[in-house]
Image 1 (cartoon, one colour):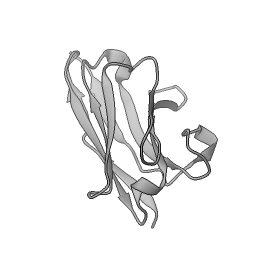
Image 2 (cartoon, rainbow, N blue to C red):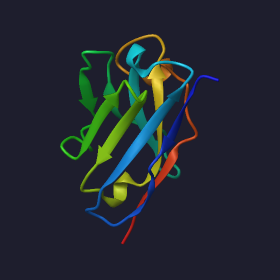
Image 3 (cartoon, rainbow, N blue to C red):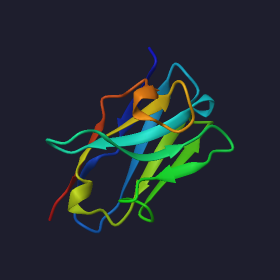
Image 4 (cartoon, rainbow, N blue to C red):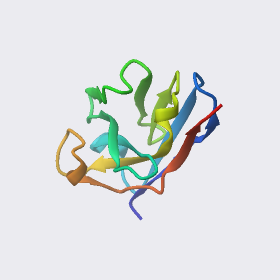
Length: 123
C-alpha cells in the first residue's frame, strides 16, 4: 500500500518543540515533492511546508517561517518537520503527502495521505 505514516505528535506547552516524522511505505520519498499539511478543528486543511525532489527546494507557510524546518532522509525514506516555538495556533492534526503530478505541493495534486498525527499546544 502506498501511504505515509506520521508520528511524533503530542501535547506541548507554548514555546516548546516537537519533531514530526513521516515514513513512506511503498515508494521513495526522493521521487516526489513532499508536503506537510495541518488541519485545526473546524478549519480546512492548509499547507505548512513543502520540499521538492532533490536538490530539494523548500517553502514554508508565512505563519511557520523561521520556526519550522522540513528535511528529508532518503536512506530512512522519511520526511521530518522540526517545529520550534510552538504556539496555540499550531494546534491541529498534521499530515504529509506526496505531490503526484508536480513539484509545488499544490493540494489538488497531493496523494498517499497518512492518517495524521495530532499536535496540541496548550499550557
